[in-house]
Length: 314
Image 1 (cartoon, rainbow, N blue to C red):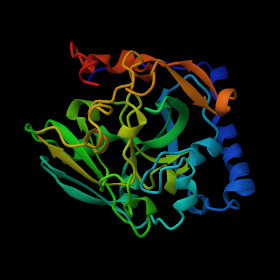
Image 2: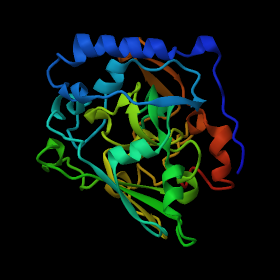
Image 3: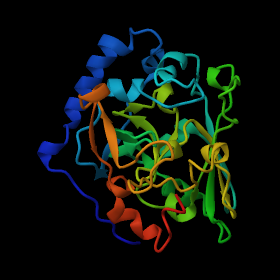
């Protein structure tokens, strides 16, 4: 197996885990357990994790911002809707199926899966297609570890993901003029899915995922725009042909299948050359910085795309 080299921060560049945890406890006691509409955090449980090898150089975004500034259209269109409207969503009990072109299909209970997989802490940059960004300490395991247990067949070329449909618990799924087609679906090429950076996250900041962040399990692909990170996954299928994806179906001219972060390819309605850093202060609460190709992970993933025209295959 290839050995991967990842940028590592100096000790002064990253917030110590102890400070993460103390800040999390402070927020949980002072705000998250009291503020209206953020009840989902009350059900968070500590995860047993180990430090992972993949760490962004930037300091993590504050937990308050990570859990209160979200896109999760199953709960509504506004950034605050996931935190204020997800209190009725129940991420337990939960099952995740792995099926399709695999030798060993299986339906996992989410807690059995978490217990079976060594969990890692990974501090990843997250770049939204809307030109804002965060740095998030995820807890999870490589998607490749789960797929290896299923043993993909030689005919498998893509991995398709499907999220849950529960309109009684997810008010954004009740329809309307701006509603997406449910379930939310996403996909990766098999080599992208098997890349060591690709993560199935089951927590953040050392605790199980809050409802508003995709409980109980979500995809994290840090070199792609955030909408590729499908939340509340119930089904993973290995398939031969490129699967449909929600935003690409909604507007293929604006949202491509690959969705690699690329500052040289603008969204039709805004520039992607820079990004607003949530929690950094400044204009609208976020300082700006230059966007990096592949969100700064080019040394690790550029080889996946060879001579592909990344302006055409956006």
